[in-house]
Length: 492
Image (cartoon, rainbow, N blue to C red):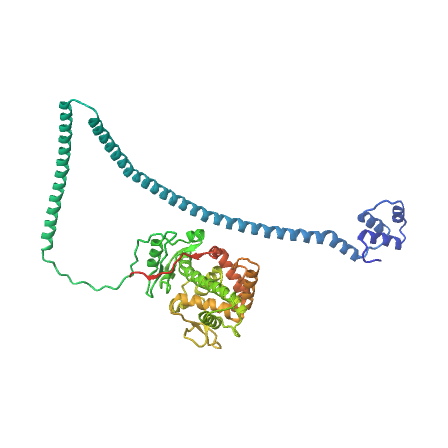
């Protein structure tokens, strides 16, 4: 029998082999018999139906449809769970956006009420000026009328006398009030002088440990004003002091997400008691507020260098200072043979979302021993330089965690590592492809190229993507520093 025949055709062929007349007559008369009817006629004629016919029929008519149904049920479950997670994420974003819009509404209302009050106050000088001009014009017209018209001399004399009497009375009244005020002031001065003459009681001052004090009056910069950079010195800052500083300068992450600018506040170290914050959300926000300005500042420095490189490479003649600058950049980015095209590939930014995600993963959101003792945010290894010995490591490995004097040095070394090390060639190539297509450099598009950063490989890149999505770190990629040139330290 042919292998590709259907089960019904196989039964008909089996009837032809055994010369079942009843079935042949039905077929000749072109009457369609079902598979069940054919089986009954064959069994009635004592013809055994092979088992493989039945198994194929069962597979075709029962097993395969059931497997398709089960697969569709699983697909439906996956789609439902995906839709549910998407809806929950949209609800979370809606809550955050609603709270931000609510706070912005009240701030705008307060500002408009202030402007209304100032407008009302500004009307008083205008009203006084109008009264002054009206009185002056009235008196002028009065005197002109007296001068131009002929009136009775007795009446005119009385009018002039009454005017001078009124003017003299007002003058005496005003001068009397001024005199009484001067007398009161002189008496107050005498009392103050007498109090100063009293002997002072000398008290020994207790020597206290210096506390970090931050000026609370920080005004918002206007559009044309330069924003000063706040550089926190290397002191044992407490978390509460840091939170008070953020509140005083109105440093809020929702505002940063909305306005796409961040204040240039540079911490040299993390607070030692950062891990004592009970709220996980507050701890994460504090970490982001400390690290974000450092990352943005380094990215803007790289962008300035890219503009300068573009300007130099577009000209045929360069100055000695420009040649020296190029030599310095070739050394910084570890480029041999003075390859300018390779320098353009390596001299580029690291997306803020990736930098924040890796900093959070490697430093435990700023609470790891390496971050607190050595300002090591990104967990870079060293075999030669000064470093911190890991407590748990294989005896076969002799590496240490690289130590840095300040946090910004760790950020700079991290960006130099991604832009120069041979292990991150794929990262730089993917970034160049996005540049060539005039697309924005998004962190989520580059996370898969960082498998060599940790031993976990692809699992590490999945964790980075998860941190970026859960904490909405993509919002910080277009963030820029508020304009600043001048640097100053806080008064302590």
